[in-house]
Length: 113
Image (cartoon, rainbow, N blue to C red; front, side, top):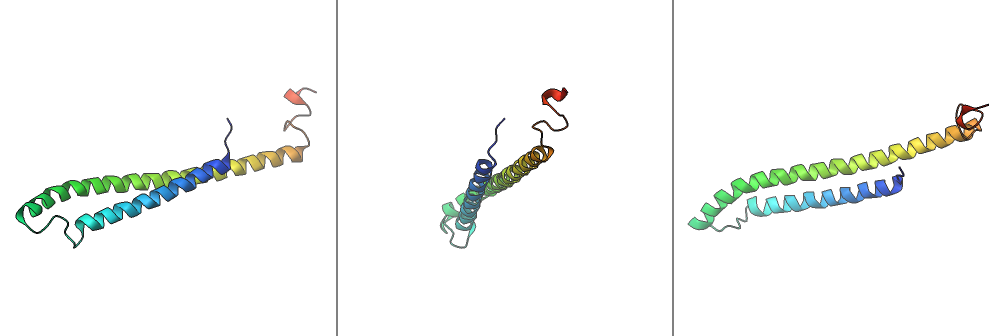
């Protein structure tokens, strides 16, 4: 398996940016529909619609918030894993170069004398 830690870290960074933009969009949506500037109107039908819509909207905003959190968590995981792979590769390369042998623990390939 080949993994490019830089590409994985870049993907994590991109995903983090998407999660941040989504969080801002969800906050803006929440402020618009639940804020003081009532977009539903002050009449009877607007008030009735707002009651029904806001109950559903609360659930939808909760779900969107959860999704944003999951995307942020995935972004962090990608970045952490990319760093771990890069560090493991560096450690393995260091072990190989310090042993003087391409096969650690043996004098020749396959451990044969």
